[in-house]
Every structure is written in C-alpha cells, then in structure tokens.
Image 1 (tube, rainbow, N blue to C red):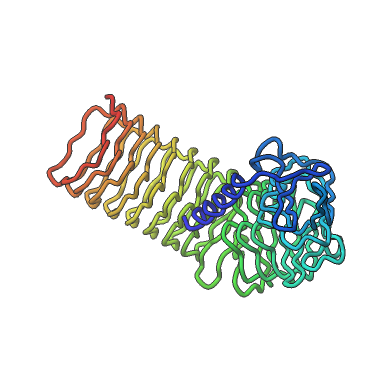
Image 2 (cartoon, rainbow, N blue to C red):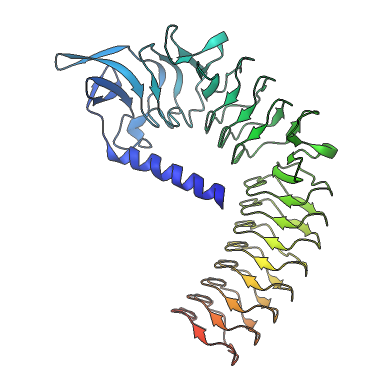
Length: 429
C-alpha cells in the first residue's frame, strides 16, 4: 500500500500540474510557458494526455525563442511536456536547458534518440548514450528504447524509463549503485534484467508493470541483494524478503516475507507456491496477477496484506491456512473467479473491502474468532446465497453486504451491537 500511495501522490501531483496551466505561446510547433524572463517547454494541449499533445517525429528545442518582440532563453522542460507522445522519435535539448521536470518523456515508445547539446552546464548525453544524465552526480534521469547506459553512471533516477514500452533489454553497468523508484515502471516490452553486484538500492515499484519480464538475475557477490536458487527474483539478503519477482519466479524456501507489490501486475504468472518459510505476504504482493490460476499458501503465513490478491480474477479457489490472523483491506478485492471460501479460526481481523466484488462467490464460512465485519467487506458478492455470522462478531460495517442480491436470509447473532449504514442495501432477494 505504501508504493500504491506513493504512486497515487505522484500521479495526483502530475495531473494537478497538467490541468493547472495551458501554453502561453507557440513557435514552430513547440509550445511554451513564460516564467519571468525565461521560457519553459510544455505540453501542446490543455491536458498532457490530450490528442493535441502529439509532438511527433524529430523535435529540436531552440536555445532561445521570440514572442511578441521579446526573446526568451529556453531554460526548462516542464513535467510531462512530451508525455505520451507516441510518435516522437528524437529530441535535441539545447545547452540553455537547466531544469527538466518529472516524466518529461514518459510513455514515448517510439523515442530512439535523446541528445543534450555539448556545453550544457547541468546535463549531458555522454558516449552517445541516447539518454539524459545529470553531470554532477552521474544520474541517468531519462532514457529511451535505444539507451546504452555508460559505465560512468552511478544511479538510474526515479522514473527514468517510465512507460518505455519499446525497451526490450538493457545492460546496467557495474558503476551503478542505485535504481530509483519507478525507474523501469511500465516497461512492458522488457523481458530480462541483470542487476550487477554494485547495486545497493532498488527503489519502490522499480519494475512494476513490466508484464513480459521473465528473467531477473542479481549477480553473485552483491552485498544487499541476491537471486538464490535461480529464483528469477530480487531478494533482500539480510531479511530474506523477496522484493521483485516476475512471471517465472520460484520462491525459495528460505524466503520469510514477500514484499509490497513484489509480483504485482505479473500477468504471465499462472501458478505459485509460497513455502512454509514465508510469514507475511505484503500489501499488493500479487495485485492484478490476472493469469494466476493456482496458489499454495504455506502454513506459516500470519499476515495477508492489503490488496494482496486484488484483481486475481483467474483464481477459482484458495486455501487460507489456519496460521493466518489478519486479512488486510481489499486483500481479495475483485477476485471474480472465487466460488467458495473458508476463513479459518485463526483469523481475527478481516479488512474493509476484503472480498468486495467477488461476484461468483456463493458461500463463505466465517470462523468464530472474527470480531468485526468491516465496511464493504462482502459488498457486490452477487452470487452469495448464504453466510454464517458467528456469535463472536460484535459489529457489521457500512455496506458490508450491499448488492448481495441473491442473499435470501441472514441470522444476526445477539453479540452484534452495531450495524453500519447501508449494511444490506440493494439486497433485492
């Protein structure tokens, strides 16, 4: 959930910036905003994602631009200025530009050439790398499908290859020590990645939405991470937590935790065994693994995190072991393939929306250790015909069973002292 929250905050900030301004003027097909005595390159339309924002072909940004008789130095490229320009093939950045906003070239799958003119005081494209590098700290901040990372680069910045669908392979040199948050986010064409033994930091969601990723290898000798037992994953060695996986991941029986969003969006993942060594499944660990049809959860797992199996709609059944005590918010949200479920006696807490929109679920057995049914926990379980509420339950949350329109009867035990608003709304049966 931490990664999802971070992503949401970043996305909100980007969208707010995108909707807050429109261009002040246009010259030769490039759009600008005026900032004092300087000009900033911006998206073409009112919104960065509009059809009008289609910068395409080769774009050369000038060092100066004249509007209404005034000449402005072009000093910056705004946030998402070229975002989602699918027809953009090359960009030349003048030596006057000293500020480049977040995701300035995100989701530009056709971009093959990025060049910063020589003499730029802040950025460079050394060794014909087809990327933008911050010269002072050797951080690559924007790349494309033709990028070759120079062996002088020490960091791959946050979102550097965000949405680079055309990227199929990349070599990370031994000079790199950190890979930033969202660095390769949504690189859907990337099939394999090798992490050198120099890397000591892999950021949140660095490889999220890399749906075709089939091979992940950390070189031996890395002091922080490993890929033990040919597991096709990145494991934090010290705490045995698997933090990044792919569709071919095999979880070693030495792993004790699956990290937040570790295998999220691995659409090609069809089955997985979680060994008995694993104690916790992190927030969003298997979020949107739509191809997952079978999973075996080891009997040591005590915690299933929020949104852990959200939208795993290929799952038809799941055995929750009696070691589990907590099922987090939205843990099985929209698992539309599930038909029946037994919640074991070990479970004491079921989060909000935990089984919402499991619309094929016909029956649920809730253990007598559960004390509360949260808000929207079983909302929109449209096939649910019966449910047993044990006398350990003291509260039923808001909209807990709303839109369960095949539910014909329900017995509420004497232990229940609170029933939330709309708890049974739209229960037309």
